[in-house]
Amino acid sequence: MRAEILCGTQNPSHRRRLILALDAFGQLLIPEDFWEIVGDNLAVLRANGITAPFTDVTIATVAIENDVEVWARDAHFPMMQIGLSRLRLFQEPP
Image (cartoon, rainbow, N blue to C red):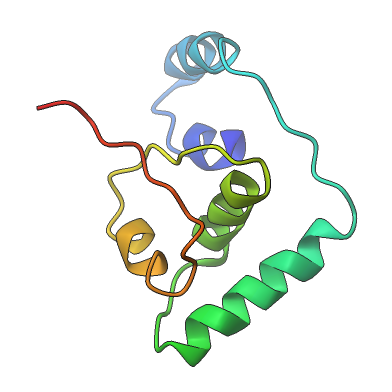
């Protein structure tokens, strides 16, 4: 997930600031068998007529498997909840 955020950096200074901000969050290790779950989730979504980017499905799967909410403004995440009922999304306050 850090990679997806860091690929949007504007310059080295922006990258350093993002890394400092990201360091405030813990990182979750991804076990080897996790990729099978990602594949299963991709298949479930496809069976429900939902197409989402691989990275978004990976992020959703990490969240589901670790029982945490996803904080995203990307429209793919609410769509993925149709097929991935355990996916929880953080609701930003108004």
